[in-house]
Image (tube, rainbow, N blue to C red; front, side):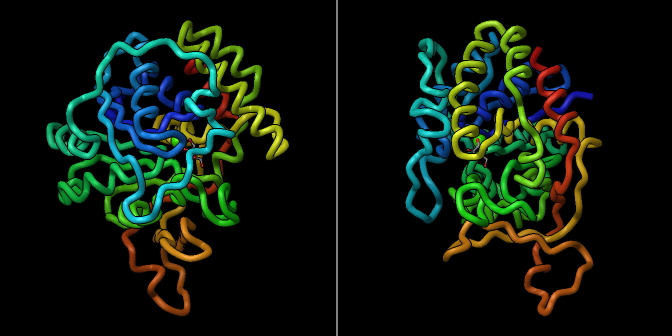
Length: 313
Ligand code: BDR
Ligand code: CA
């Protein structure tokens, strides 16, 4: 079965790994890349998306999107994690292709309306483009097949604050809108991505299998791995964004639960994702009033990283 997807991304080292999967996997029909600020500024995100598809010899539309959050001021890009160029500060070839003339949100609306009921939106950065698309066409909630989001944390705690995951923290107002829109949504958060470690051995297989693209993936991985070693004591890196695609193609590797999501938009817990399991009573009903979504709680992490390496080698 082929999955037609639009991949919304802020590349980003782990985004680049996921983009490579989206470009290469035979069961993915990649209709477009939409870009957002996040790991890098928006121009760099678009440049990297164009570059990665050129290196895979694919001509994929790239539509540029949000340059900052909907409401909050923008946080500086995390150059110590992804490098100032988003790809580990390695030298990059020139890009020949041009971005699509439409905004990311318009691209999403147009593409989904061409194939109602068929397209999955996979979002692995701050979700402002999805929020903007909903603003342009609220009926999108009925027209997408599914929305898969890498973001949030149910029980794991945060990675940029004690409680917030980076993609949610970067634009909590957009996240609140998107996670409560009532479309069929799956949240692939830190509870599962932190159980997956992509090692140097995996990356050697990927480099060998991916030609020019492999050199970029391996070079940027080396920089990202240094961050994981220094700050988290992990020998390898968490391939967060590839986990969203792993869920789409290998859902049997994940355990999910249904419930109601909300995102804290202000105060000391801003960016935190709150999850009220379906059917569980609390002192008030306010946490259980948002539409049902699915969240990932557990994963076979070794099988996921094997799947990533197999796909790319
Ligand atoms: C998420 O934040 C970004 O830095 C990564 O690319 C990933 O999408 C992990 O919290
Ligand atoms: Ca990302």
